[in-house]
Length: 256
Image (tube, rainbow, N blue to C red; front, top):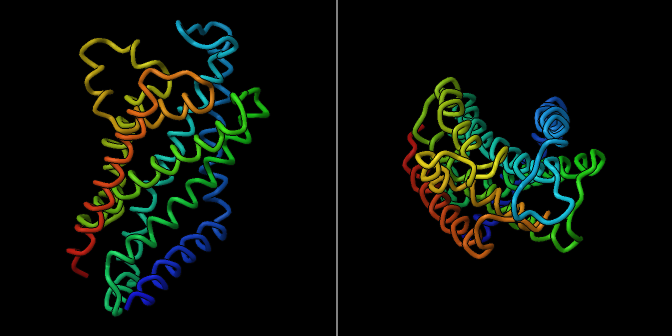
């Protein structure tokens, strides 16, 4: 049974990878929006941006790139929830769930595939940003940034699977994307420092798990953060663990 579960995780991961690599339009589409943000917003605010306490040489483009990486990981991770709904609609989920394997293994396979594809997209955005003038602190900072990207992906893929497990159609999930995911992104400090938010808005930003993901990416890549790096890691670890557990539990209760 254990070998069957491991094989299930691998098969689900491989399926997600093949779907991602075959969908060329999906790859291009997920890269264009972050690139346009970097090109338009980053260039527009670059000359007039100043941030108290920031290291020398940190312009708005350098400040923005970690936020756009967080956005890429958020949106890419949530798309895993849509794939669950598609599998429900086309009958694949029914076939896989009657197999003699644990549903937890199915969820882990989806999470593994979703995190891998999200990381690929995040790395591509980071590479593109280098051509626009973004500068990392050093090479080890890239390794630490990968850890934060991984944790962001784990948490929001679990969140997406949890939501998709309770829904029946992609239209309802699209509404969730608009009314839940976009505020998560906008209140995360991706565009502006959280300390610049009005006093009544800061508590909302502090409750946003992506805030700590973006802050951790900034600390890793440009050496500037508003929270201790250890705090960013702990909150993301707790959020990711809770979402994986919640997503797995709700998925196990799904009726096909």
